[in-house]
Length: 235
Ligand SMILES: C[S@@+](CC[C@H](N)C(=O)[O-])C[C@H]1O[C@@H](n2cnc3c(N)ncnc32)[C@H](O)[C@@H]1O
Ligand SMILES: Nc1nc2[nH]cc(C(=O)O)c2c(=O)[nH]1
Ligand code: SF4
Ligand SMILES: [Mg+2]
Image (cartoon, rainbow, N blue to C red; front, top):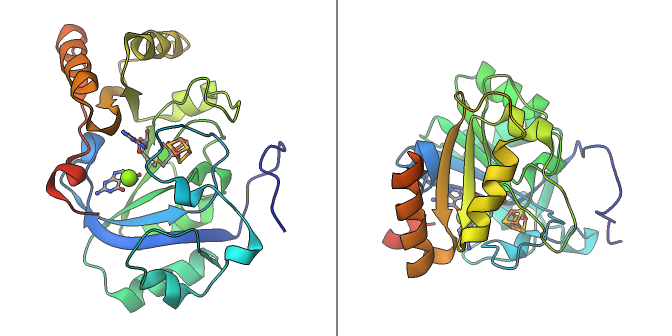
């Protein structure tokens, strides 16, 4: 059965995991921090340049075992289902060293992440969510929330003001001047932007996008976020 993603559904509670791996956070304010990445399955937003199109589809026919997912050596749409407790047991099994957990996707905020992030914080981990801001963010109060807004993508989803307000960091993907204008319109929705770190991330390492991001970051005193993992060829 293919789940309809365009319904105003409540958040999923069963976690669907496409990938889980230990690497270095390559983007944003935590660049350089060793982290376990948990990539959740499903995204209806439809960015044409998305790095992770293999995570878009939620379909029971794509469900496999946790073992199969953990030993993947190439991107695929397969994923396994678990809950927060099951995921923590897998963390122990895998013997990860990193103490920072990045929950990404797909669109991780299609899921209720309160149980998972609360259990992780109780065990001494720090947590971070990478989200498009199109779903209400449900997580622990200390989770670092990175909102990477998606404006007028083909899925027709809007960025929620509640997600922008919850953001610790707004990491805007840019390639053209209009993307800067879209970011200004989003920031105008916030009463106080002094508490949020704004950064620009060039889309797909394009030279023109990078030049635009560099120029605008200097003009506006914003940060630059490069996808550093791509430059050094790690996951
Ligand atoms: C793959 S997305 C998954 C999380 C969530 N759906 C989101 O968009 O934030 C993770 C991050 O990668 C960024 N991203 C995806 N594809 C990209 C690309 N081709 N170039 C630059 N950034 C990209 C997104 O904007 C987001 O910040
Ligand atoms: N190393 C590394 N850093 C990342 N930061 C955000 C990523 C993502 O796909 O959400 C990502 C990723 O896929 N790999
Ligand atoms: S919102 Fe994130 S996962 Fe979804 S299509 Fe856009 S970049 Fe990809
Ligand atoms: Mg990525």
